[in-house]
Length: 200
Image (cartoon, rainbow, N blue to C red; front, side, top):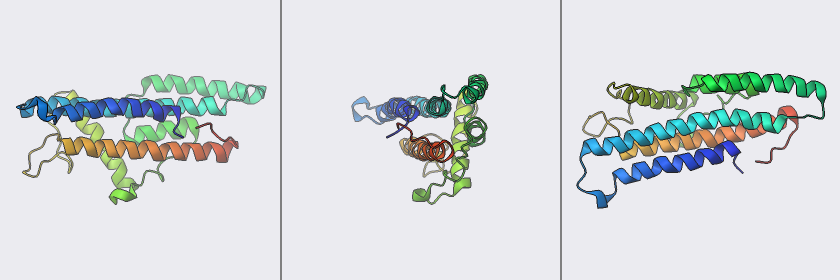
């Protein structure tokens, strides 16, 4: 069963998929390329926001599951750690691979780096992290009015640099994969370190 953070991610990701699908809906033809870009940009921004919210909520899920108010000493330290994490979560706004990993390691002790290997797409941990960073860079670029950077997934077969339905599907697949393996990794980490079987 997915974590509460993953369940929230799936709801938000579905909204991004609606935006992507709307851009390719044949009932809206004719639609200008510039208009489809608005939908694709919105979909990408929604996926990135969902990923950021997932990482933040997963840290909160960790503290919820590991709480033990019956042990006063542990509870005191746990509460201090949780409050410190909450302050950092309020400042977390660039969920690239480094920042996401650092947040998880620092506040939960779980390091997802070895789990972020996307074998199905023949991407090692470095390539997977690079694609996540590229997604964040693309989102940053159009959010601040800069041209979209040329990445393998942002170029059309004719060489134009823009977002496409396929590019958004690739982003969707990447983030869905990362949520799934991060969830499993966190669950196993909690069980190994704390001896707690999570309810998710």
